[in-house]
Image 1 (spheres, rainbow, N blue to C red):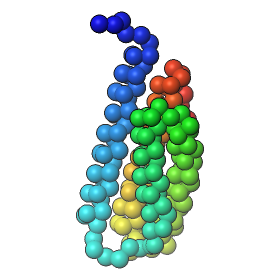
Image 2: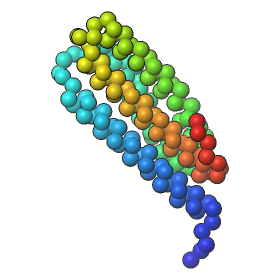
Image 3: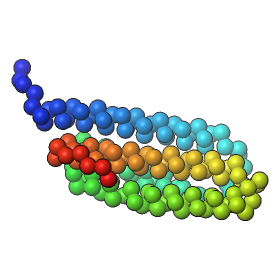
Image 4: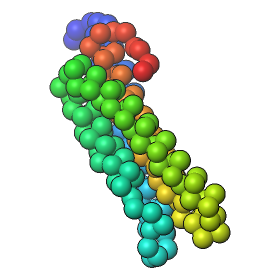
Length: 148
């Protein structure tokens, strides 16, 4: 009934891109669930303080990135993008701790350390996909796609 304009095409292409990242959130959350489900019932080799913080941050980033898209809120998208540095720092901390545990006693800690490292990597990737959603939100509002 009406001729589509650039804004209409931008909204459509942005929605398709966002759907892909949202699907990846679910895939990676499912992968985390499988890893945790198959872990032996032993006690953890370390206190999961930083890993728990990564999980909480990932949930926050996902919620805020999707909300930024729904509300067309560039400021909220910027907040999500800024949180990625915190997520990356937590990932490096967890990685360094687990590498040290393997170095000290790899036979005792190795299997669980690798599983925890995979969980940390999935959480970090969820954060990256949240940033992608935020980037697409900004693109939808400005017409300029910028990688952060």
